[in-house]
Image 1 (spheres, rainbow, N blue to C red):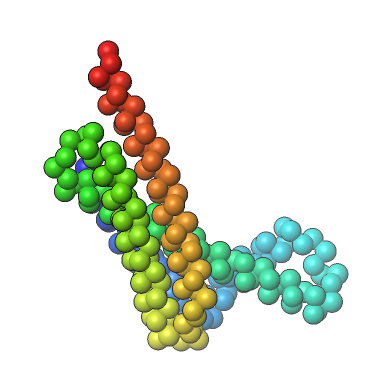
Image 2: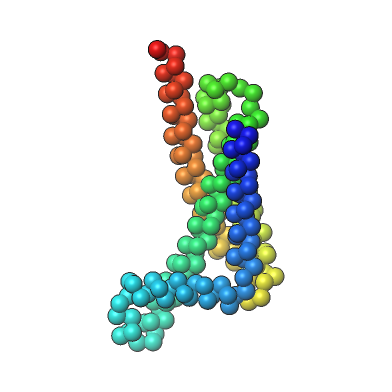
Length: 182
């Protein structure tokens, strides 16, 4: 369990660094990256784009840009939420002196909720610090909406991690019960 905990801890820290690097991009660099993705999506999903007037084209570009940029925020923080949840859970299991039955029983379910909330708070605080960091980057500015989107992404990642851990616990519980009944 110790190795698994350090693996998730390392992945969490590396992912935080990835988010920091993306946030360190200037506004122009970030816009160019988004623009490339938006143009690719427009070429696939809006085949008659060139036939629209300039106002309609700009409206389409604005909507797709918003979806891509907020979707990127959501996804970044969904991954962070997922990783931070497993970092905290594996830490708890590493520190626990309980037997398998107790580790995966009711106490563990309650602690998963507590660690899930802790992971959500951590993700939200990192989102806030990320937005504050963007205030010091050229042509970037902090946005409360991004913190909300980031936190919602973190929550989604934590919920997926909860489902994954529940499935794992269910399989372990079946093995424990199965070993008692030969």
